[in-house]
Image 1 (tube, rainbow, N blue to C red):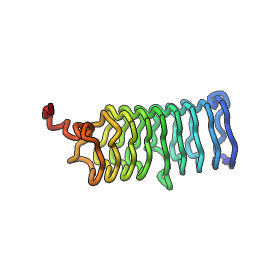
Image 2 (tube, rainbow, N blue to C red):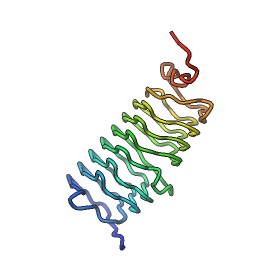
Image 3 (cartoon, rainbow, N blue to C red):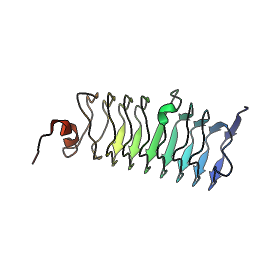
Image 4 (tube, rainbow, N blue to C red):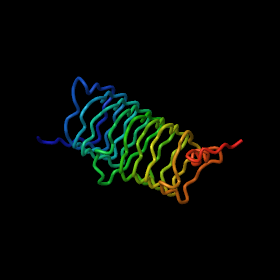
Length: 190
């Protein structure tokens, strides 16, 4: 199937369930208040694209490339980002709801998650070195064999991660949040 090339285009309030997004390469495009939920973005390429107030819940992203993609105030529930293309993968999230999504084994160094709901998100074996988790709710998020070196968790909460099963050298935590590092020891701090 032939791919189209779309550049510098803005999509406003489009319901892509009624009219699916064309398979192609999207560069410097803006998506505002669009519904892409349950759609198939497989093998598409998004370079320097911005998504504002969009619903991408349960969208398929098999071999999809996100290169310098930003998401603001978007619903991204249950997305298997672990199926996305790793080449030059780069994303930013602000005020997004990403619960039940998976970043299993994804290379995401220096990724920013700002004011995001990240409940039950799978970060197993991901590279989140130097990532910033600013004012995020990480209830039930899974960190196992995850590279969190120099990551910043100081303003986030509800995380539980095992320092023995994750790389946390030079990661930053608040005193209150440090309790999430001690959970497995079942100690009581008063």
